[in-house]
Length: 100
Image (cartoon, rainbow, N blue to C red; front, side, top):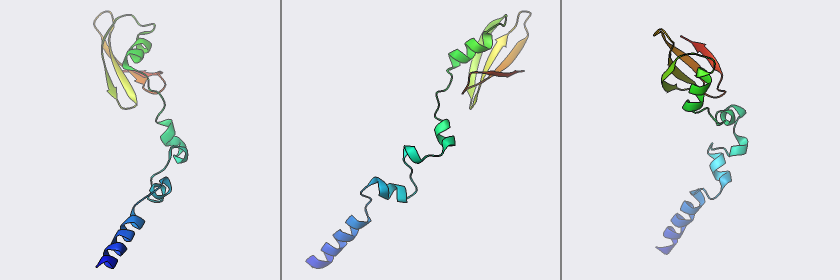
């Protein structure tokens, strides 16, 4: 009876991942081995406040609100005279990319 349980215990120990190499064998990658695109996605993003400041630069009017839509921050802006526009700011670079 002792022998089968010892074999069972040895099989469990052998099957358990014991190192990072075992995790990598199962498809998990370390930070150094991640593709450049995945690493690029972790760059610092522009905050909504900074996006609003960049959208307001050189524009008369007032800030109404902002929303995060993935890689774009949309800043709602009211121009003098009442026209309302949505100003799109790239969330990664902070560059104003368009206005509707």
